[in-house]
Image (cartoon, rainbow, N blue to C red; front, side):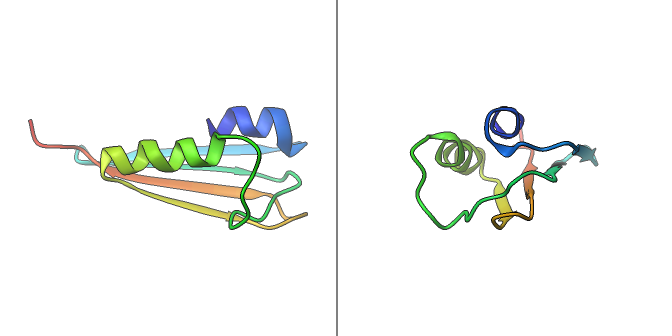
Length: 83
């Protein structure tokens, strides 16, 4: 969802995607140098809301850092469920 939002809306020229895992936790960071947005404001689309719902369903944490003109960084932290 984050990469789709970058392609459709950000106007970014650079995107960095970092993924780490220690076997129990998965950490994902997606950062761009695009136009940014105020994550506190409602948008017409479902992208951010959808990401929040999906991460909540996994029991993870989602952080969105962005501001108009300053790009966006989205960080996801999820712990694997015991099987």
